[in-house]
Image (cartoon, rainbow, N blue to C red; front, side, top):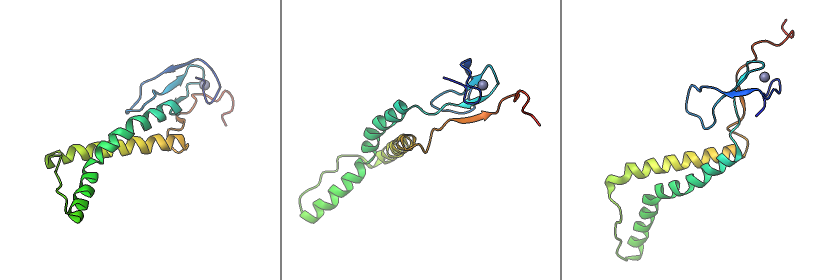
Length: 128
Ligand SMILES: [Zn+2]
C-alpha cells in the first residue's frame, strides 16, 4: 500500500477511532493518516454473508404471504415459527440489508472510498 499524498511505501497500520473493516494507515514519510478504500473482495464477502442473513430475516414476511394465500385458497396453514422470535428475525433482516447495501455501495464506488483522515504534517515548502 502506498501513501496517497506522497506515494511513499513506508506505511504502517495505525489505531482507528471506530470500527471499520480496514485499519487506518499512517505514512512514515509525510505523516498523512488515511482510511484505505474497502477492497473489492471484502465487498463480495459482505454480499455473500449478507444474502443468507437477509433471507433468514425475510422468513416471517414469506410466512405471512404464505398465511394469506392459504386463507385465500382455504388450505390449512401451519405456523412454523414463534412470534417471540420476531426481534431476532428483524435483527437478521437489518443486518443482512446493511451488508447487502454496503457491499453493493462499495462495488458501485459509492462507499468505502479512500479518505484522508489527517493531512500531511509538512508540505515541504509548499506552505504559504
Ligand atoms: Zn506520505
